[in-house]
Length: 183
Length: 192
Image 1: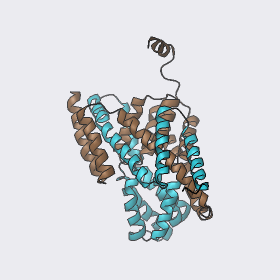
Image 2: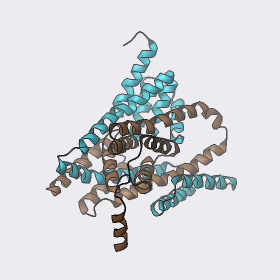
Image 3: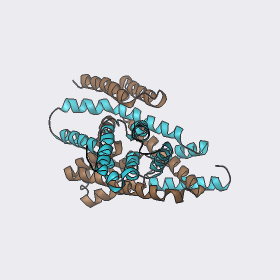
Image 4: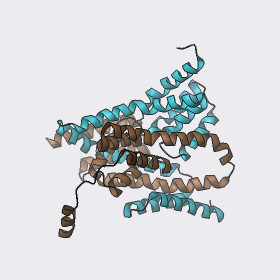
């Protein structure tokens, strides 16, 4: 596409991640397997071990998990790689939700809007519960971690506590369990 | 009951909308303090329960649409909330606030990771943080499930979606398309 290798690398990042952004229904996690295939097998930008490390970092880091592609862009092509990969994975769908939010704020089509709101609600609830279930399964730390997750769920439903306090409590409990040799 | 109603009457319904910098700061703070996912749970707490800038009804409508459209849910939700509260500037602030600060952090973390991973306690602390953070996802799921009408069809669709995604690991795209189509068609027929 271009004589400049850096430019053609950036264009490849865009070509890989922009289409992937449009299939990330229900959140970024659904695209991870495909990102892995593209980055490691198809383009060989990273080894499988490098990809797994990047994935682990993206799970520890705050913010949306899809920032994994920002890290990949950074490692593959530096600053502009990070910028291009980030815009490619988040950009296209941002225009989509913006357009929908805009249409929603207009008058008209009330029956359709109400049908969409009422109709999508059980689907969304099922997906969020499924995401919680999958996270619960994928978590390290066995039954101690599950007990903390359930206690945290109950506390959030029953009180107005700041979630950061709960996360601090989770950290404290785990360091305590570690000191006792239990995890 | 009567007292509560009187209280509600005497207070203004919607508190003033946030300023641009307030909105940016909230999204940034949520993005930077959310470990292990569950960002939507933070957004619900902040915008609905603590600041009362939107109703739970409005929030859950936006969340359903954010889930059904492609794109990272929390980013969709940030754009949705930003747009509802402050128009296109709010949407832009939502996008930048929820993406850019954690993008910088992940690059820094990636650079520092080799030195961090030497300490076993880092991993232990992160396990504890992640366990507590899963509670945010679960409580969000329970809040969303409670808002589903207590009728056979919506409850069956919710259960079927859960089973298809969590237990059968079917591709989300087809699950959302099928369950969404059936569910919206049913709601449309009932709305008439």
